[in-house]
Image 1: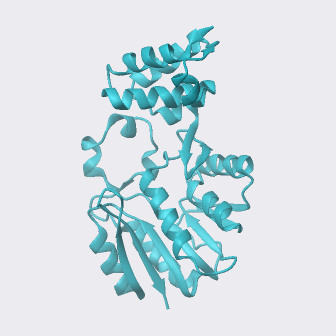
Image 2: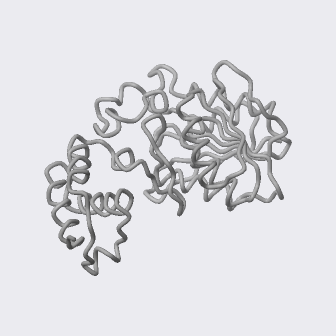
Image 3: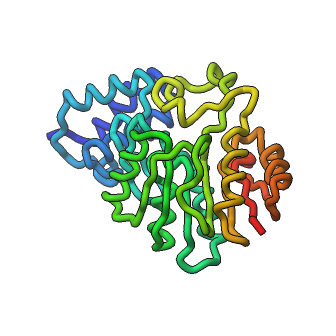
Length: 278
């Protein structure tokens, strides 16, 4: 039996080789919680627990190679729930929780028909299904992502239907939608070298990057599909690159959407665009 607070401190100290102190401590908390079932309370009260030292050492070595904690443990927190996560899908971000919160806040329709394009781990679609108590549809081009999303839907008991579909080359599988949401790839390839290694080395490029000469490629295609798939008065929501808010807004207006609005996240960055189809 070992003092878990001491284990947490020793783990954090090792992680400080590649992370700053606060981040190392937070990652150490997540590792002990998600991989070994130890709560912060257990750590703070210095409980005695049996820990597999070899397994802990393996996890630490992976973290020292910049592998994201969510891929190491296979768990990502999103909107108060724990999602299964693997390298075939992006790790959910806090700004995406803000996107989900906005959709829930603005929804005025009972039993809305919702479609999420580029579903990834399913965090957006599944959260909306559970919070609004409705069936939600999701598409993704990646078989791996669909498999991860299906596992999450099963584990969280969400009413979902998934389609493997390439939005750039195929029509949407559902119409008559009240809410259409997407967090598509939006990072130009030119930004690759500026990004953290824990992102570029481990997260799927397919879900991250777009051509430098056409960074709005997914927004354009999804917006065009929305004209045929949304009900009159239906709502479109995008998570966006902070540098492209005005460009996305201009394109949506030109395409025929109304009440196009850019929303800032908690960091003051322009990260969400909403619009209505009349």
